[in-house]
Length: 248
Ligand SMILES: [Zn+2]
Image (cartoon, rainbow, N blue to C red; front, top):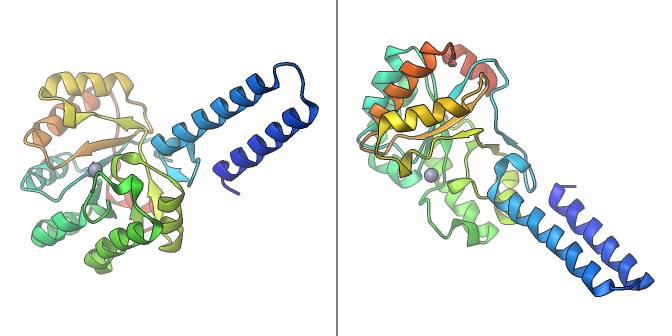
């Protein structure tokens, strides 16, 4: 039973009890129960960390940080790979299927350099949260097909959204959902120094970090952040350690 199903069951039981007993202000109590239910639901939809609809790995199980990159491969990915090679770090790249189809050579380079690939849907549609299970399945399967032998059955939901349809599709394809504990918000920042400072303020020794490899300043963002993180004693996974986390 998922947390969502438990939440529904508890809500129904509480409402039935209130309606049957009809205490004073019982409509107010019903309203309050519904408010609590809806807050739980919204938290579940927007936070993979909550494990409300499906379980997601959101922290590194090692005392080393894990870097992850979303929305590539892109023209900036090779630069990101160069920085990772310099610091001997292995990361997970959650690729978008239609980007993968455009840049198969970059995707091969990601694998060649000892990084892992994950599925980040085919189109990264802003309607992803409203898709039926069937449509989500098509999105995920298309990208799984493109990943082929490089598929590790890892999935990161676009924008970190989860709902029953996405959870059903993930379950059906036997994918492992991966979230994050530190969101960089690099898509909303134009200044790499400010971004690095903000990230450092939230960094823990087991952070699972979300960055993007499709931004003009992706390379600068990464390098500045790593310089400061290393200066402060934080360590990041190498290939062997990353493989052990994802049972590769
Ligand atoms: Zn994304």
